[in-house]
Length: 106
Image (tube, rainbow, N blue to C red; front, side):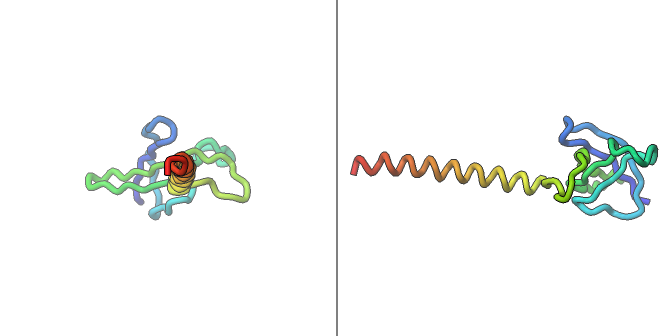
């Protein structure tokens, strides 16, 4: 068994339960923090990252499962990609505005 401590990074970087798993979980998969109440979804989390440490305490960076339908939730990389696209679009707009103002001086 491999032991992992959950880090709830979207909820204020709180340390959560320590769980034992028979295999290393994949990023993007789900993990349940307790074995109580199998029909309860409040303790199911998405795994966004795995942190291996030399001291023997391993960590899973998790965020709450929110009952998504057909689409999986965005990963941290997806959110970063969207942020970069928004900034790129804003820079393009500012660049166009600057160029249009400079055209009047030439």
